[in-house]
Image (cartoon, rainbow, N blue to C red):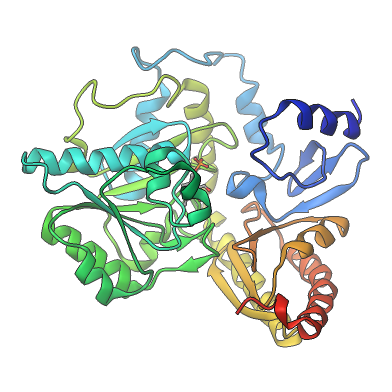
Length: 410
Ligand SMILES: Cc1ncc(COP(=O)(O)O)c(C=O)c1O
């Protein structure tokens, strides 16, 4: 099938929810994705932070082909060997106690919102502590519950009315948080680094204030680590950088090497708010996904792996900062580890196309932020070649920004 045929078929038969880049992916190797003509793209998007081990990782392929373990699905009505092991490992990594497995990030968020309300209802049956507090600019998913805790109006407006009882507080405004996190709040949900919101890191003061107020009011402190967790910033989880102790940690994207799997990991007391029948899913935590996830975690926790992520991330950041000193169109370099972004003074959308032509997959979020979420195995040579390719694109943009002030958003 040619690329044109694929496009034609999709345009006729798919519900048009995605704007795709003009690439037909046919295979991948390490950090490089190849199209049908054999052109390679160094992948700085990583399937939106999913392909942490790159493409075709030999140990993942081996695990997939293991003939002695052929179960694909058994349902959550019976046992298989891998869910308990994976829950144990995630409990160890998060410092928490129990896990619930779902299929996508948005479902993990749904689970946490339900858990927060059930937890509050257990302590106080009058139902007055039922609010969920989220952060402006956040992204937590697309189902109605998770969408209600997601900030951008463009995602929310077409689907109103949304789930009631969800409020927002300004990011990194600890004083506003002190006012907003009242005894009516059952759960405070926050991304330690906002991803879709433009790679914006929360401050220690903001996060600590949220944690303390949750403790004070008996609300659940929920860290959404779906994008920034599992090694992305060179630690198991980003909340660990701030010395936090969340009640609930949400994990998804890279967990099962590209198969759908998410986890809501909770403290013992929070977890006790759910009893059999209160929550569930047909597919969540299937044997194949859990087995692959165990392999992913085994690889990430090997000596030196996370240190390398930190080192490559630091190098990447330095390179971007150097670029900032060379091209005036860069407003700011942000992020941590291998979750980095550069905010431009103008729209970055056309840079994505130019970089594609140059053989790099990148992403633009929030219109002005170029976001980089490469596989965690990315190397310095990939980083330098990306920065070399970005330089002329951004220098060209700088010219546009100067010539067309109306394009400059702020
Ligand atoms: C922080 C965060 N939470 C939740 C989600 C939703 O995850 P999913 O797309 O798997 O439903 C995303 C997806 O990008 C995310 O970045």
